[in-house]
Image (cartoon, rainbow, N blue to C red; front, side, top):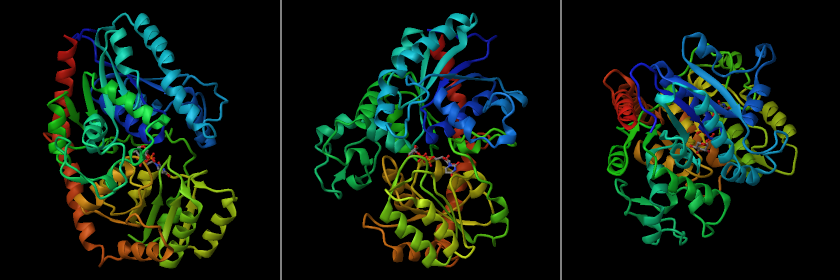
Length: 480
Ligand code: UDX
């Protein structure tokens, strides 16, 4: 095992998963650890780097785009390196998403192996080096064992979702998987998880076919993570105490969230994969709390009829809205550009539609009064952080499980469709309910309370601060 030395800073090689919902917490973690004195070698794939570069406003591209250049100027020791993901750069990953995912399982590991090997060979003071890789990867244990590195797995979603994936065998033994078709079926066998229903299970396992590439990713990743030395979770202990404590019986893990609280101010280089539209002027012209922010994240797609119902529902509600409508988000044969232009016209100035925005800047704006979200975990943490209550419309994966936390457990959001087909009337009714001060008073009070939990967790002596210290202690102990 690489040895810890008091005289050399801890050096993390950080390899994230090349999707936006993973890149954001990973970059925040890099900044957090660097601000605690770690040296970081942060690795992106060349493809992600290319997307980030293309997404920068022209005036900011001088030399090579480096997402940590500002961090370095403020004294943080972060190197930024790019490697291949195993596919040629010109390969269309959007069009061939399955092949892209396959390449991350089959081709990327040998690229990482070679990269880590070369880095270790050229680093003569390697004694304090260790690896932090996204839990979604299938290779970290193999690579870290080969090079004698402590292996830290970083989980970017709630601990509830982690433990459900981690207990797939138990869920199979208890007959929950493959799914038998009853969304009301109760799961009670997972340690630390209070009764939950199959309808709140991650969508990938609400299917009888468990042989797709997505299943392979989860089966392999969760075989691998069982052998990881340490686990970091982007959540807070107070949210998921029983689950985290059950998990820690098996493996040392540390809840160190919310990482969205770790943002670098004045960062000129954004880590977004799409160009961010500046919405600040439009928002500044709106009354406080009067705008609904709408986004369905970076991955999931909407059916065309759902898009139409949501768009018409927003118009029907007569509320102001800012919709970040990512290119390609709607599964459609038709050109939606004209639909979007029409939606914008029909809203008579009440609606702004942009492809992508700086979400934290938007959520923090005083004009924002609610968030219609797909329940990606980052979006949920960010919405709580900026005290914005939610309308939940989960689309895939963990989003279904995250919805349960927001609506059923914490009561800081309302459901859009309760599993039914969404209609414009319901959209309008829910939007009005969320945006009216009177009817959303309870939600707003709750979101303040939940935000306080986040504030307390990252305050001095707060759980996440203490957990970071424990993590560093354990890490050093692993290296001895
Ligand atoms: C994916 C999965 O869909 C999600 O369920 C999982 O928890 C993480 O990976 P994604 O769709 O990317 O997530 O959603 P989310 O987790 O909310 O992350 C999106 C990130 O992109 C957020 O940090 C958000 O701030 C950012 N974003 C989104 C923008 O900066 N601008 C936008 O216009 C939209």
